[in-house]
Image (cartoon, rainbow, N blue to C red; front, side, top):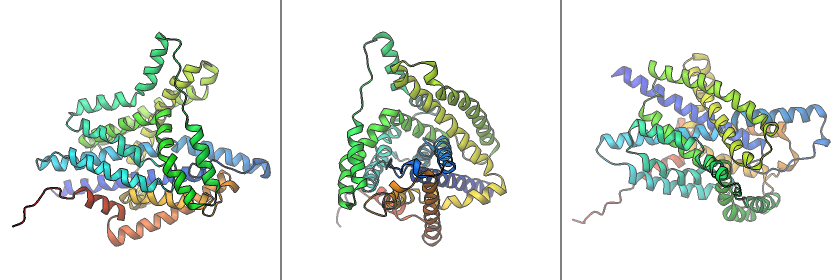
Length: 399
C-alpha cells in the first residue's frame, strides 16, 4: 500500500510539472509573437547583431515550442479525463454525461478568456473534447487506433487523394485574412472596449478557422484520445514498463523528427505544385511537430527521475496544478502588456526584448501560482470548475 501511494504521488507530480512546462512554453512563445499581435519595429533601426539574435530566438522557440506546448497540454487533457472517468467507473457511474457538462463550462471559461486574447484554445478544447465522450468506452486497442487515425491528418490526406482522381479540385481558400486585419486594428487602438468587441466578434472564429486550416483541429482530437490511452495504460506511473515505453518514445520521436524536419525545410525545392503545399506540406509539418512533442515529453519524464532535473523543473508543478487559472491569467497579462489599450509595447519590440519581457511575466505568474497553491491548495478557476462540474442536478422532493 505504501509503495502504491508513492507511485501515485510521483506520477501526479511529474504530470503537474509537465503541464507547468507547457504553460511556460506557451507563454514565452506568445510573448515573442506578442500574443497574436504581429506588429514589430523596423529591423533597420537595430544593429545587425541584435537582428541576428532576434532571428535565432524566433526560429529556435518556434522549432521547440511551436505546436508542441499546446500538444503537451492536449495530451494531459486526455490523461486527466482518464483519471476522472476511471474514478467514476469504479463507482459504477458513467462519467460521460457529466463530462459534456464540464465541456460546456469550459466553453464559458473560453468565452471569458477570449475577451482579452484573440487566439485562445479553450474553446477548441471544449468543442473537440466531445470526442472523448464518444470513445470513452473503447478498449485500449480501439482507443489507440482512433488516436492514430486522427493524428494521421485524415482531412489533408483525403483532399490530396481526391485531387488525384479529380485534378480540377482546389482546396477552399480561407477567409481568415479579413478577420486578422480587424483584430489587428483593435490591437493597435487604445480602446479597451474596442478590443473586447473585436475579440468577441472575430477572435474565436479566426482561431477555430486557423486551427482547421493548419490541421490542428483534428490533431487535437487525436492528442486527447492518445492522452486517454496513456492514462488507461498507466504509462505515467513510475515503473519499469513505463520507463521502457518513454525510452522507446524518445528514440522513435527523435528518429522520425529529423527526416520530417529536413523534408519540410527542403519541400519547396522538391515540388512547387500548389496542392502539395496545401496538403502534403501540412502533413509533414504536423508529423514533425508530433515527433518533437514525443521527444520533449519523453525527455521530461525520464529526466524528472533524476534529482538534479527534478530540482530545476519541479517548481513548474505550481503552474501545472492551476493550469486553467495560469492560462487565463497569461492572456490577461499579455494582452495588457503588448496591446494598444494597455502598455502597448508590442510595436516597439522585436523578439529578443519580447522574450525578456516574457521571462519576466512568467516569473511573476510562477510566484503567484506558488503562493496561491501553498496557501489555498487549488487554483481559483480550478476550484470553480470542480464545484460547477459536480452540481447535483437531481430534483429533491421536499419532506
